[in-house]
Length: 156
View 1 (cartoon, rainbow, N blue to C red):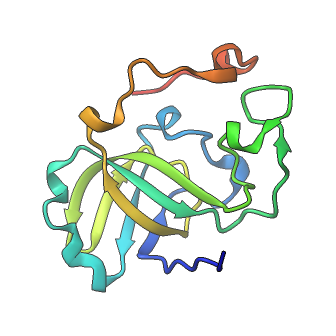
View 2 (tube, one colour):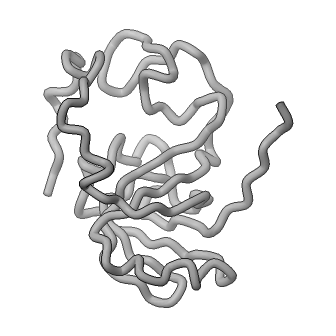
């Protein structure tokens, strides 16, 4: 298969400049705010987005350094398969986050619950739709018994 090339549609700005300071998931930092600066040529695509409370962001882990197929996740002491965790060092370093949408100002989106490094290249935005995105019967795999999970709880 040929290589696939993506062009960022904008940049995500957050208070985090280092991986070590960045929350492991946005649900643990819901009060942390940032913003997206969408490239002006894509601003028209924001029409009607203001009606959504949350957005799904797909982005490029621009500070990732290679990958290993077995990696220790943040929430457990044992290595897991890379496709069973959300670590940033992946074969294709693509991340996703669900963020709170506060406001749209032209090509700027004010967001909350950020868990990415400042300057992260944004690949796509999708609306979060509970009827499509919540799977009540979903299993939690190894997270169900993660040794470090009890240290974390989502903050409102």
